[in-house]
Image (cartoon, rainbow, N blue to C red; front, side):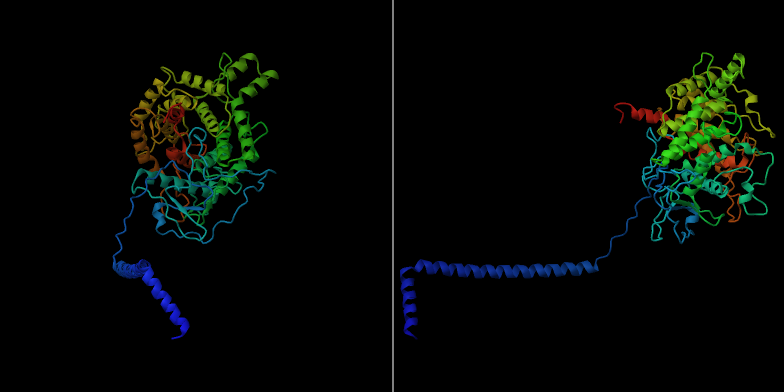
Length: 570
């Protein structure tokens, strides 16, 4: 050993003799560190072993049994999302339904359609239906209707909303779909519907509707509007991307195009004063009241469309100016002829005071009811309706259906040809709707009395079908649904509505042509004669009956909405 090394050893020995406690401390730390190392290494080995065991067990574990959630409860008041691409098929057809291979091409809905400014509005997922838009109306939230088939961009299918099998909803919604198919199939290329051209769309040697020279084509504006209301009532706008699959036509109908073309046809026929009739001023009321409703509802669905709103406002202004005057000069009901035209003719010397008074006081319950419905639709769609106009209509409705006035005048319901059953409760239905939509009180005893009268004459079909009255069924369904149906704040509501609705569902859908032949153009239409439908026969029947079956989700309950709007209401 070298001298240098020996010196180091001596110093270390001397240090150990002089400071033994330091060596003892160092030794203890070394021993403790070694023990801890052994513990940590052993723990990590156990952890690794446990993980391997868990993985091994997991690979052999059985998957838990799949729990199928119960069917969704469908809210029939919801409407489809117009920004989504859909194909409508019936529940029965869904199993064998093959979606279209190609989606409809994208359409620029800002494109001019006869007007330099075009339809400058569109609809979104919050698109609203007609009456109720402004007072709690039902708004679409993107959920499909019960018989919608949604087509995403990859061509796959997203399961449609579920329906309770065999439920009333299935029966009525299937009937609505078939009715919309029939209407789309019989639309003219220019967007109109006409009783004179229905048979031209069948493509068969024996069309579903043979030409009837006795049918009156002067109401084509009103009939076109009524058909449009059937589509608008289902929430279909001018920009809807929905397609209606039609086994008879063999191709899907672009629902948005059906509405867009029809609305454009109406706009092209509107006169500067807002009217639509080619005859005398308000001599054909259906040709002015129904287009007003269609334009207002189309404008509400096409949010931001200033073009449609201008057309609708002009039509609305014309209706308000047509309101007749009571003997004291206050606003009253509506009848054949416009009050504004009467005043202008008197100013020109064409009418003396007696003639002016007679024309001014000539009013009609049915015409007034249609106008009130148009005004209420307009108000709910965001248009301003003078309170005086509704107040005058309410005053007339109360007077016309007051104590002792419900007894019907048979001449008021005279019908051409066959002797149909006279439903005197028609007048009660009209009176109810005027009072409800013109701002009447839900506690009005007349409403209870009228509801009782309607419930005593529910829809039924006799063997000779002379009991069929689609007009009466439509107005009575609306009136009872508003007064006593879903959403009504009345205590014990349903007493009158439920038996009526049961009778309606049992009577109306079975009258629809339900053949399953793919080449039968009659499928989906209501083709029979009925009281009061000589002006449009199958076209009138089908459009009106679709509207009747849309009452479940088309109209918000006026009294229910008013109750919800009260301060402190939950």
